[in-house]
Image (tube, rainbow, N blue to C red):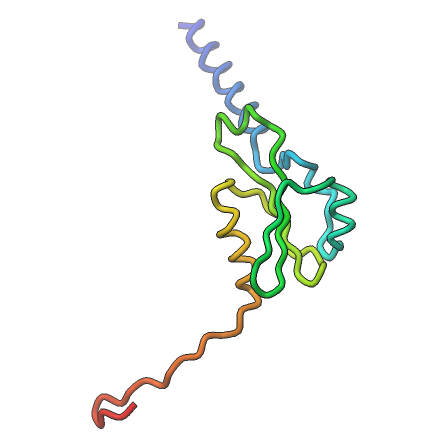
Length: 130
């Protein structure tokens, strides 16, 4: 019975260690503390190096992508990519997303500057006028 309890304790400790090393705070391309909001695109490229991809989005939003350098994490948890968004050459968003969600994430960031939607006045049901 003691041997089983020790095995369970070691398994739990191993899972905690794995969760700690695979958490979202391991950025892959660079550590999270290296970038500050408002940095220019040139400054970010000088810190992180050339990006693996570039995406132009509406509202003059530019997204740079950086691949993760952790192949073991990609096999275990799925491929992740660091996406850095710029608006008017200033850093506005830095996130790590699944590689299949890059388009969605860039579009969501660009959508922050979309104009408000126009709503038609509701029709008056009693008179039938719109």
